[in-house]
Length: 233
Image (cartoon, rainbow, N blue to C red; front, side, top):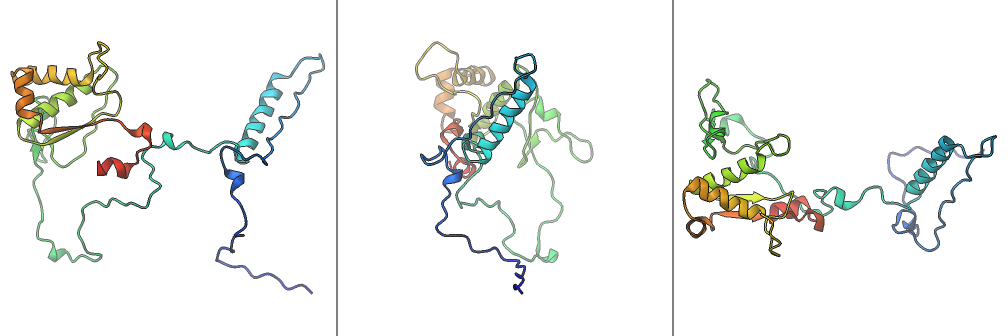
């Protein structure tokens, strides 16, 4: 009588000699490609297009499951970090908190006035105007193309730096500066045009007075930067 194997909640020890070449990309030389099944012929001598398409899909799925293709390119998810670096938000430095030890109670939301329009969009709990965007909060500005999102953001940077607020502008869609001078009105040129219009200063005056008050973080996601890299920068 054979002894019955006991169930275990623990993972069985993996074979140390096992290779992960089956999931490697590109496939190694000893891996054989999955052969494509022959096309199905119709009674009239032609090819059944639907059957052929079905066979192609099955072949592709077999190649993916066999490791011929990666399941997902790293460049398609730029903020997925593979490192152990953790960026923790600021929080109460205790595992257990007694409410009576927290000194601050009800607080008043502050407004940051960085745009004439947005200063009239947000209100307090009593219905009065906040006179700015909520400080310390994330604001999502959405809309179709050419609806003024980029211009509004650039105007907000100008208003912020003129009020003494150090600002970082993250460019995630296009090049900020045309260093090859191909004749394009790049984003930095557009920013300076808005800055001179809002401030009433010349380009030289604005740059001399405020260039140290804002930072530009260009798009580097295509170079494999992670979320942790982005925050660290």
